[in-house]
Length: 142
Image (cartoon, rainbow, N blue to C red; front, side):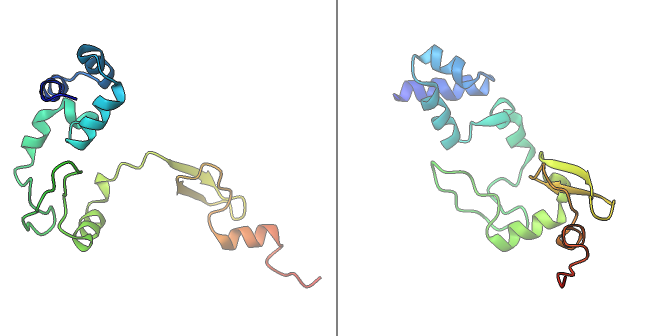
């Protein structure tokens, strides 16, 4: 990818163009465009909404403690200074979590409603309900 292609890619992403459209425009591979965009913070919905970066005046500082962050070029930008700050912030802001794979069930053992993240085939709300239902209360003496 030449410097000119890089600049054009940046400009086209800011205008909201997708990877395939940019690849056709510049006559390069879609995967090359996608890889470049991911390395340079131009991937996903964030790229189309360039103003979104302006909404965070604290960019370059830890979301939790405000400590200045040392960013490394060519990799994903840091948002937190350490694991402790990241975990604290996420525990205090559960509404920010975008869980797409949350499933609702009724337990086959006790009949209570429960939710599970990432597993669409759950039957029981807990291991205890599984044992009671499968092994008749856990008694295996007979």
